[in-house]
Amino acid sequence: QVQLVESGGGLVQPGGSLRLSCVVSGLKLDLYAIAWFRQAPGKEREGVGCISSANTGITNFADSVSGRFTISRDTAKSSVTLQMNSLKPEDTGIYSCAATWRHVSRCSLSGYDWWGRGTQVTVSS
Image (cartoon, rainbow, N blue to C red; front, side, top):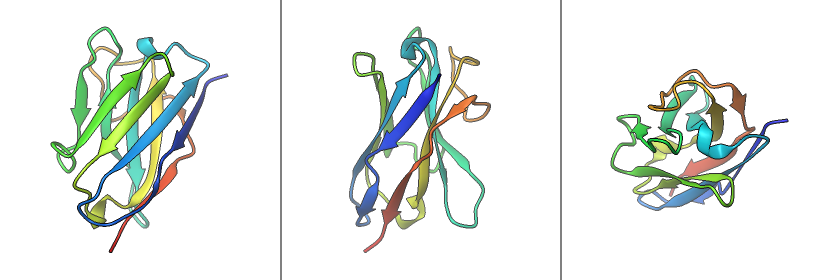
């Protein structure tokens, strides 16, 4: 059974940083693409960024977060980390991680098969 569990959300002031973790079980992390998505109140879910399988390690980010967010994989801990810097109020939302066996060599921000429940991120002064 595949499970993804997010942690690390919270309240942060504008300009601050947060680190989200996604612990994955039930699959071999190196072989899958992992993405982070977010959903703000009243808005559709959007892809934030993704990391391809370990074969390429290519990352891909939405324009809105490019240069501020990074994604890394820790195979030993079977986890993927989303590092978020220079946070803005518009980054507020529920952040979820997801996994797929498709487009693993060059990840996409759509088309994922397994999902976590999410963690709340609030950016406010």
